[in-house]
Image (tube, rainbow, N blue to C red):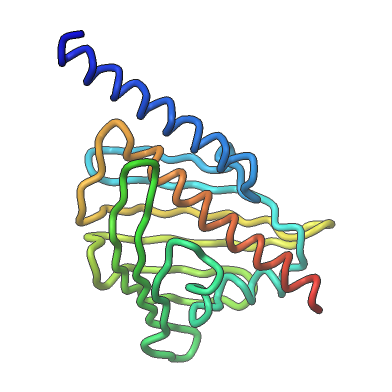
Length: 191
């Protein structure tokens, strides 16, 4: 068999493995990939998430702002710390490694965060290997839990493959939201 065909088969096998891993992770996740929309314009990614957390709003809020413990329950974080606190504001630094199939990328993000208690979390990137990051998370009480609406615009300072970039971002977003919802459910059970 000629070498190019072998390489082609290797690439096809890797893509099949990647699709299988993606589908397997989706079935176990609390956040479904269908809840997450990612668009890429040039190097900028726009992320929109609308999902339901089956816990009361105060508990959802407590988990979403627990930056000091976040590395304990979000698998791709290796460090999460509050660098400064002010009246309704935080400066947070998070570091970790995002993985998707054979791809991985280290990230380092420092953000200024404005808190409107139990309703809104706004973040603006001020350092790390993300050129631009602006996001807003809104919480709204529902009869059986809390509605989470998240919007972010991200310009990473690291390369993401053009074909896999949006899938990579969608996977990482689903993993992070799943971990947060799982932590909400864990805390609800211990209350």
